[in-house]
Amino acid sequence: MFSMTGYAYEEQSSENAVVSVEIKSVNSRFLDLSINLPPYLNQLESYFRTKITEKIVRGKVDVYIRIKELESDAEVSADTNAAVSYMNAIKKIAEATGYDVNNIPLSLIISQPGVLNANKSYDVEKYKTLIDPVFDVSFSRFLQDRIREGENMHRDLEEKLTKLEECAAFFKEWQPKMESAFKEQITAKFKELLEDKVDENRIMTETAAMVVKYTINEEIVRLHSHIAAMKDEMKNNPTPGKKLDFICQEMNREINTIGSKNQFTEVGAMVIQAKDSLENIREQSKNVE
Image (cartoon, rainbow, N blue to C red; front, side):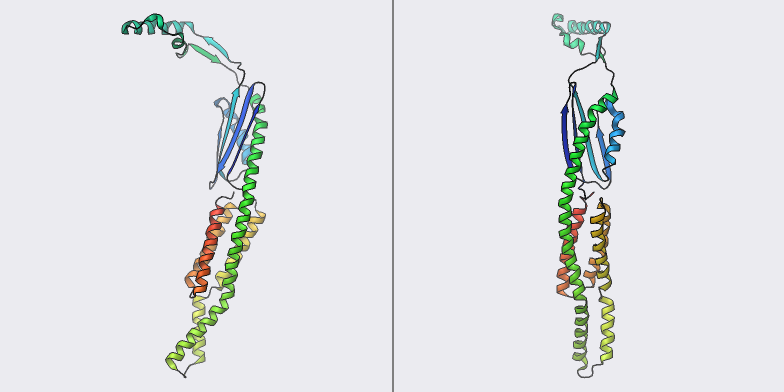
């Protein structure tokens, strides 16, 4: 079981560059992957996207790949004609405004568009070779972070599920008690109305009718089945998040039905506990991949 939240950062230096990779993720219903690369390396996005989607199924994942070059092989050229044109235009503005034309800084001229032009060729494969080992370390740490948190979630879910099992066992134990209580209530009512002329067959008929109306046996059976299904998903499915959410919906339906049919305070109190446990399971399952 994996958490959808995780974080990792790795930075490595070589002779010519410093490469850093930061990966972080939060909960999301589906996989929402964003990879941020320097613009000149955008063609590597599909490569890193494939590496991530092989391991990640759900979550909003943001990846930041940064490169700081220590040495530049860019070729810089100067357009002197453009520089002269800019200087002449700026001098005219200075004369018109009374500004000293001798104080026009050179930095103002060279900062104008087209005066200085840098040309650099980017060897994408070379950058890929630089980034790959840094990415692999960061991604491995990121996965380990999700595994560690996932183990904590697994333990928490098991605790909540055990509590829900106890509630289901209580309902099962109370089912025959409820039928016996129905019979006692109906017998007492008939004796109050008819005194010694109580018809046992009539009592049995009324009891059966009440049992049919208020029995929770089918709901108990389905609730136990859903609990078993959830245990199986948690044990055998490495990415059970969506399935757990669906099973929670089915459990909630059974518990609500038990609550609506209930006629006893003891069962009502246990229904509240069951709902509380299920709500905790539902919230935790939203964090599971």
